[in-house]
Structures are given as structure tokens and as C-alpha cells.
Image (cartoon, rainbow, N blue to C red):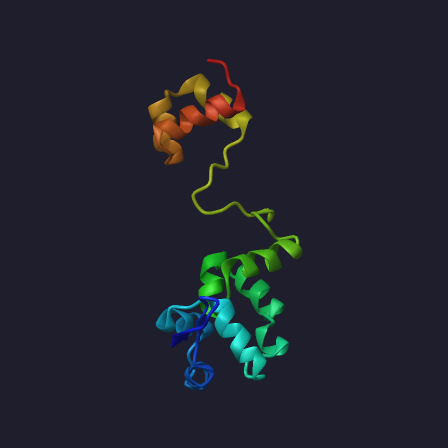
Length: 150
């Protein structure tokens, strides 16, 4: 690697193409050479070696299938080898952000305000905590959230 008059590093295009042909990703190449990912992408695109748009596109159906099976955004991104924000945007654009299904997440607090008020009439907070298998702090938090006056 040599430096030109403008103080920008000049990288060996052939070496970058060779590393790419060996199956290394742009990120792996830039880490090994100590350059920006955009530099590697630019050089590969300059020679028509970069990935085509078809290769770059994420299979949206696969993302949504994995999401429906309960995989998190991070897990899907690791499985498909894509950025987690890309996966999140696909899920968001499909209207599936958050837990909008009728099924609550495992471990979530599903007791209603009315049910909690009824329990408070006959049970102490530690008893409610044991019954619902939630911490005492969680029960106090829900009482405050629901605006229950004791």
C-alpha cells in the first residue's frame, strides 16, 4: 500500500478482488486491510465484482417466516447474514413491529387492572407476587401503572 499526494491510501485492487474471490466479505476485507468498507465496495463495483442487487436483496418471505416462528430481529439477522436494522425495517414495513398478536409474550404481565384490584381486596402484595409468579417490585409497578389506590 502506498500513499498518493492527496494523503489518501491507495489499495491494491487485485488483492481486494482476490480476497473477495476467496469468499471474504467486504467487512472482513476492510478489517484485514485497515480501510473503510466503502473503499472495498467501490473497488469491487469498479471492476464489476461486487454483489448484484439480486444477491443483496433479502428474502422478505424468509424474514417474515422466521419472525412468525418467534425469532428475534438479531437472531434473524445472524441467520441470514444481514444487518439487524434491515431485518427490523422489513418487519416494520410488514406491520409486524412489536407484539401485536393476541398472544402475550412469555413472562409478560397479563393480569388486568380489575383482576389486580380484586386480588388486593383479599391478598397481600407478597401473596399476589407468589400467585402471579412476579416480583413484588413488578406488582408495585403495576399498581402504580394502573393507578390503583390502596
